[in-house]
Image (cartoon, rainbow, N blue to C red; front, side):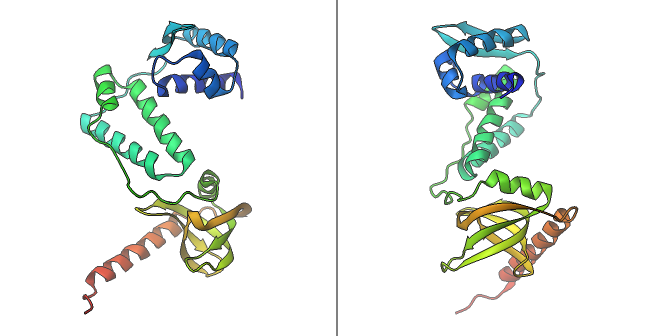
Length: 238
């Protein structure tokens, strides 16, 4: 970890952890020595960050002078809180952690009255049934979709049948009870959904399908919408 990255991570920890944050907690969080924490706190103060506290009492980030306040309407702020808290509940571990970190960043950059409103928001997200955890590194899969390169993985369907799949990853959808990959399947020569909790042994290939991801995803979503529309129009059976 570079020194610049470490200082950035320290700022994030000061935003995210309940204040005052002890140096011991910061050292454990960042896997560095206490001496490094004290030195980095002094460095951040020298760069303009207002950090209250001292050794033995803990530290509180009062103000980040390098970041200007953000302007949000109160309803916008409520929407952000609700959305990010929902992501923290339903998403894969890396994305859930990113949602919590993003919420801390927003709280550090809005005016004090809105920071209080954000911290004590009246909206929250709770799920009584969480999706099964993924077997793969979803961050790697997301990056493959952004890079527009095909991936391979082992897949187990609902009946327990095992297949090897090569697909063009188009997008990930977080549903009520499961999270799925939308993809173009080379084996089936058609669009398919794959549950993340049934995927194993993910391999990112060098087979690029750029710049077709957006158009393929649009076509797949149009098909899904058409199928949903037909299902709604179909008369109920006895």
